[in-house]
Image (cartoon, rainbow over all chains, first blue to last red; front, side, top):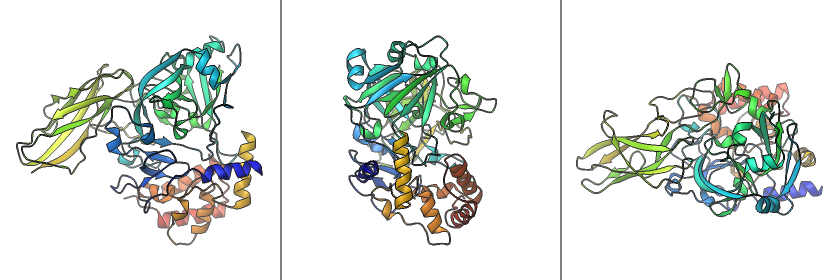
Length: 393
Length: 99
């Protein structure tokens, strides 16, 4: 009974404010704002489990503030964790020395590292997908860029004496399903990606402890890979010699094999489908939306962000003549190859009338944004060239 | 974790659907129609009902049929065959907005 009361009490304390207005379908231009405790108003995609995205205006900053960073959960039982009693266990069939670590252990026994990286939900922009597919109907804001601080996952794995036969590393968080029959949200990574020096167990985000809704007190940060692997409220790591066969690997977050570029997850691949892995090169205009009016002959600057799976952005190009010719935009400060890169471009407002602007980013490995979507049942990887239709007058 | 899961499941069983509901859910009103109550009761065990209208623009009868099957087979939703039929008829009638 006490547990039940605790659960209900926790649930009752979830929201600082009530949802505003009627609930609307996503992508229809009638976004509803809602407030989660500790967050500023976000675009409300669903209440329980909570799925909230960052409004466009809040994606204009170089780093996305913790108070507006998007929130994505699959399961509705989300405990508030006491950092003092939180423990992380490391075990599995490929471990020489199983570990139980406290927050203090992580803070004091391991080198502290920090890194800027984009966290992008696999389903970001699903609500813009054609043909439309089921799932949370995200717009552009299921993503953000943050400075993540913590420890290297590989330092923890080595402390546990990871064996050479390790194939995958499996991660579980404290959030759980309502029903026993619902698969817990557990994900795995290839051992080589888990051992990459950039894969972190983050304790802080933008210089502050992780917000509850973004995984307090510790979450996985897998720079360059989509958010599905960034397990929140991390409590358990298992190093295994066999492929993990949980539902969230075998039955979700998969794309047609060979359909997209990026890292392969070979131990989870079938001839038909394979796990989504790296973020594809992409860009987003944050300064203007279609329908905006520009004043004739007045200064106007287009601005936005470009990012990819870790090669780094080398160019952002703008076309105002129906994609026939492209001019380079000015790139902002390089925050690191896993972060997004700001871009700016002075628009020509000397001719009244329609001004259709197309934007495409190019990464260091030569990849650019395509003109056409690659259909897939999950509605993943929408990185097509964005067009913003403006009016000068 | 198992204890928490059991407690959560028990809370649902004892208090009925919506035992884990969060503030704001009470304002979500599904369209009137036969099957609404059973749809609301079963779906709200695991998630708020806004998932239904929010997915409506993407859904037709076939889409709802697949979704209901997924909820039962993959996520263990406690829905009997006759209930599934009622829920399908309701959702296909009231929330199939796919163009």
